[in-house]
Length: 295
Image (cartoon, rainbow, N blue to C red; front, side, top):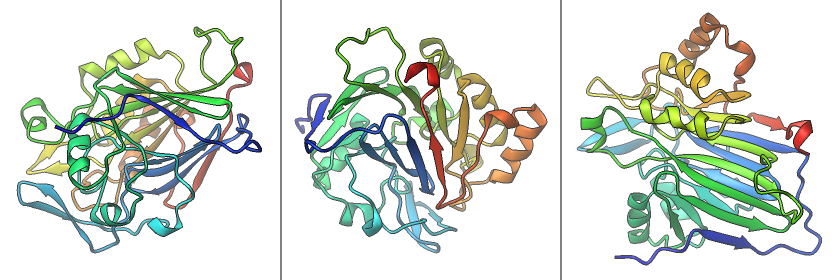
């Protein structure tokens, strides 16, 4: 059994590095891959750099063809502090990534994924169970990542799929005078590959003020079984998580994604939630600021 790291990471910074707490960005690479930059951290999620026409293995002899290209190549990535990996599946950590990603990069993920990655040479893993936290510090900024509940399909089917976690990212300044009860500068939720189910209701109960939500949609279906949120469940999630702004990702990229983004847009309009949702095409950037009362 591998010996995984304790759930605390401290990054070295140059004396001239000042964390920008006023501006952040989310760059959409494709599938569930985004680059989050805020408070001095640069975070890569669910790295997938296969190209259009490439096939990914999803287990049990099932494959799916990619329909799109990533917005950038893996060689074009900025300097990454760590990877946030929702689960170990070929469309979230692919063979290009296994070959070309720096094996010393920290990876915050599930225990199952950590074990799989360890066999591939990625030993700097920080596995979490649901509601466990990982604490990161870089210069004057702190980041807490808490594993959120997630289920990759209905109960019987999900047992045969890799365990999945959502994530809550809470960014704070390293201010000794600040109260631990004060809200973070920015609170960002990443759903991971989950369907809407009862356990998700605890998220807004524990986190009543969520600024941004990245929702994995696509309506993934294998043998007719729904494994990720489709348009209707995506609208449910927008309403349930109640983030100030929700952004759909993980759509249109693979043949197993059966619910296109256009369906979600129509469902959002029908539900009257247009002011709660923003959209990114591959290669586009969403820019954000912390709420004025938390700066």
